[in-house]
Length: 76
Length: 514
Image (cartoon, rainbow over all chains, first blue to last red; front, side, top):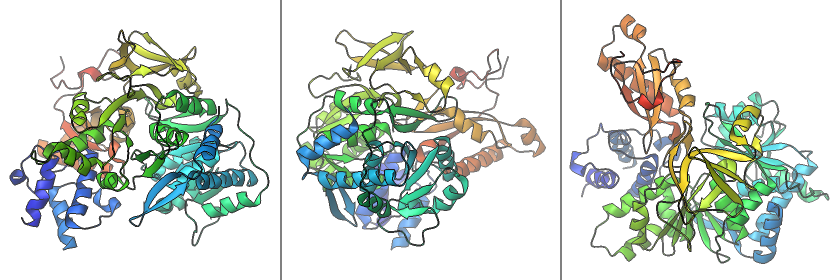
């Protein structure tokens, strides 16, 4: 499974939207129904899955799927 | 009984037991009851030696061993602790430091960027102690926590025991008028709440503290109640890592707000159904978790049944900062799903037009320097909770509505819509605005200022885009619970009552006015 699919599968755990329907311009909270805590838990899961360390103050500014994917790309 | 007595008894009984555990660069660090109290006493003596007797001392920071030792040092002496929400913007913190008349401040290293703002805008602050062992390039008035502890260790005098009716702590809570109120809790308020909650745990029982430490629920029930039982309180370093830390610390007991239970449920529900529940529970909750105490907002009883299938008992309670904070709770022995439990033994409950009124030794002394608000909330010793409810024939309390205009989010945060509306209304494009609370967040319902729309010849898309970008900008500086996650642009003005106030019960109606 490629990185983007893995990422979208994690997103789908917290949302009613299926992984294949998740697009880059979707907003975590408004479009995907994440609570503030869903979002934090999701970020923690990204850290564990992709073995990265996120800076809390930076990642809390993320609003869309595209921004989160971009962040992930920066670690590669 | 004072908090000081409770803690001194714990040190005698559980001196060598670990009181606190936390992660330090992925390694677990620990502090015994004996060591923790030794540091707290150093802070207490230090505050006396530095001339802060009778003063208010603020604390800003997320949970840390230094934070809790300092807090204990303050409240077991002749000083009053003012724990503030570390997630607030610095302007709000400045206002609360000044409004609480704090003479000194304990500040976490993470908040060092705010230091200059506090020094410049809080004239009453005589000293700031950073919650770290050493501070480099400290400006005037700024010291490390070890400098205060050393001053305490070198002093012979210790603070005398406070009086039962002395104010131990001032906790800020959202007000319905848009201005947060400082709840004054006495020594007796705190100690009697710790004693009246009948939950017993073996010494060394592991608790993982995941709530914000400045909240009364976390401060009194995780920390003070936990310490009274000889529990080991583990610090969750970030909400990003709550699930990971549950595997690391393997707690027996946790306190959560409903939003946390909902998030964990999503993870459980999304897991492969072929994984046995016991295996999944160990993976998600750690090996030992048996009980979750929840409060702060309504929890759908559905989750209680669901978690029971994974061997976890959820026990719901009810409280508010004004009651130190627990009013009623379900216990392992006596519980009823959907109810918020039976009132504590030190609490009397009655109803006035359906509103829950509370009287007892945990009820606050009043709001700091707000006599009008205090008079409104406390009548003849009865606290008007603002919640509507009833009691069943078995003595269990149930909540079924609210009297006051306060939004209770599922993370337990109380949000005053007026406070946010006042800020949003400053934008020229915002004609009328009402903030409503959905389960997980806030929605701004805005009627655009028609004069601006016409002057700039804005179409509907442009209005939506401009308002959304304004909200995005607003959100950047707000704690998550005050962020606006929904926008509804209205076609018509809000319906108003005869005194021209917007009728909040009709804000969802968007029709031309008659």
